[in-house]
Structure formats: structure tokens, C-alpha cells
Length: 449
Ligand code: PFF
Image (cartoon, rainbow, N blue to C red):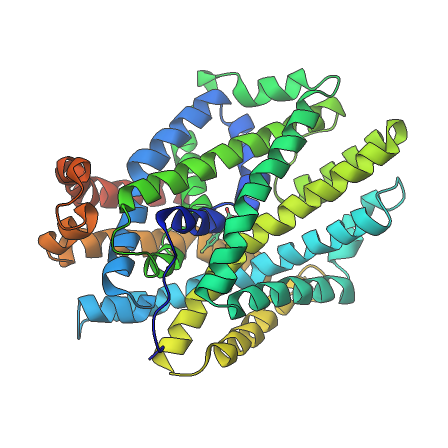
């Protein structure tokens, strides 16, 4: 067993760690597009509702389990429901984040590569259209994946306090500063108004069932729900932290970052007259193209903005990747009783290999398909569409139906010390017992067709 379990120093640093896990590629390449496509401000309002009334309670279930058990996901469930099959949920939630980490690190690697490009050569009309040939090549993406995963490993190697907590404590304010600076710049570009309208004009005609499904899916991925990262980080949270405040603080920070990211990206996209795309295309094709266009008018500024932009993406991706890495490390250190160093190395080897295959699935392995999907897409679909939803459902059922009500209440109210939480306990408990499980199942079934 680990000698002495480390703890985050305060609620603020716990929020910054959880917000670090939450704020990532999902906020930058998915949220702005989703908001634009699903009714602008109308989507943002629906998203806010989904986050506060559905996602936060689900997140708190993981927090309650982790903080109470003070162990990795597997041990936590075994401790709280000894001798039952619930420990398999613990194992599943060790595997899921490691699969996500493998392909996430490939994209993290592309971002590192583009950061290097912005720093050393800048984007030009010649190299900007080369994303397809870059990501389908063999060595450069593999090298970039190795660098990104290596940096993640080094931070995690530093431990809970000197690695994860320290990195997040500095990165989160820096990330907010950077994205805000980019947004201010982007909004002031000539022709940016169209992009601002795309994001904020409330358009309820575009709101239908799909909007809710999209909002929930986005909330799950963005808040890293159902895959044990929240549980593991919460196991490092102090007993006097107010988990409701930490949960809401995390969700609000994540939402604000996503909205500002929208203002950083969409006005610039519209100002340069290109079609807003989504996913990798938005970051690695549309944006470099914008930097080239700007470069023709203001080369130095364009160069600075591209560096800041890719730096933001790399740091945001790192704060997420370390949270996934830590789930595996906590499990191996505590269950296999080996040093953190060795655990970090083992996870590195496993995720590097799977990530390398994912990376190659854009090139030499693009013909290898499972259920019609390349390996990269398969890992993405299996984890974000199935494992996250399934994990979240089981966590709420475990907390609502398996755990003793008093234990849940004591964690939620810090043994009755938090009066406001005491008043909110009944609705919270009702929510996680009845509403959340039903909503998760309904949304999952609806998303299948
Ligand atoms: N929340 C991260 C993002 O929005 O990019 C992604 C993520 C991190 C998913 C950690 C799952 C996870 F366990």
C-alpha cells in the first residue's frame, strides 16, 4: 500500500485539479461548434441546465465514493461493497480513461507539433493545407505522441502534490488568461460580429430532442464523467472540503472556459470567411488557415497569436491527460504495491502502444477497421458513447441504491456541518436515485438512433 496518501492542499486546488481534468480539447473543438449548430445562446442555456441539474449530481456521486474510500477506483468500490461484483466497475473505470488517454495523446501530440510549427516556422500558404499528409504519415505523429505522453508522465511522476496539484494550480489561471486574450483579439477583428452572433443569438427553432442529447453528451465528456478520474481526484480531497461547492465550481469553470473558447474561435473563423468545421479539422486546418490570412496583413501578430493558441491547446490537453494517467497509476501503486516510478512506466508503455496504433490508423493502418471504424474512431466511440455513459449510470446507481443513505448524507454535508448542503440533501438524493438513472438511460437510447 502507498506509504501515506497525499491530499490536495485546499478546496481551491481540488477545484483546479478537477477543472483541469474537465477543461481540455472537448472545450476547444467541440463546444463552440455545438453551440453554433444547436441554437447559440439557447444551447448554452440548455447546457447550463444539464450541467447543473444532471452532470453535477452525477459528478458528486463519484466524489462521494472517492472521498469516502480514499483509494483507487477498484479499491474504493471493493471497500464500500466488499465481496460484490461492484469492483468490476472499479476495474472498468481504470481501463476506460487509459483507452481515452491513448488516443487523446495522439491529438495532444498533433497540438505539440503545431505549437512547434508556430514557434519555429509559422504557417504559410504552402504548409497550411498539409494536415492530411501530416497525420497520415508515420514518424512525426508518433514522435509527437511520444513527446506529449512523455510530458504527461513526467508531471504524474512528480506525485499528487508536487506534480498534479502544482501543475494545475499554475496552468488553470494561465489557461484562462490566454483564452481570454485570444478572445479579445478575435472579437475585435473586422467582420467578427457574424461569429459572435453565431454563438449567442438564441435560436429556439434549432432546439429539439437532439439538442438535449448533444448537451448531455458534451457535459459528460467535458466534465470527464463516469470514467473514474473524478473518483480518483476526489480520493485526494480533504475531509473538510465542501463537495457541492467543489462540484459546482468545477462545472462553472469548465463552462466559462468553453464559452470564452467559443469567442476565441468563432469570430476569427467568420472574420476570415471560412466555414466553421468541427473536431480536428477546426483546430488543425481552419485555424492555421486563419493565421496565414492574418499573416498577410500583420505577420508578427499572427505569429504570436498562433503560438498562444497552440500553447493553450497543449496545456489544456495536458491538464486532462494527467487526470486519466493518474487513475491507472493510483490503481497500480495501491494494488500491485510497486513504486510510483514503475507504475508510471507501465502505464506509459501500455498507452504509448495503443496510442501508436491509433496514430497509425490515420495512415498505414487506415484499412484496418472494426465495425467499420478505424482504431482511433473505435476507441473514441467505445469510450465516449458507451463506457462513459455506462460508468456514470453505475456510479449513480451505486451511490443512490447500494451505499448507505447515512454515509452519502455525511459525505454530502460533512457530517452535518454544512447547513445549506443539509437542506439540499433530500432533493439531491431523490435526483440521483430516480431522475439521473432514468435520464441517462433515456438519453443513451435516444442517441442510438
Ligand atoms: N474533459 C476532457 C475534455 O473536455 O477534453 C476529456 C476527458 C478528460 C475525458 C478525462 C475523460 C477523462 F477521464
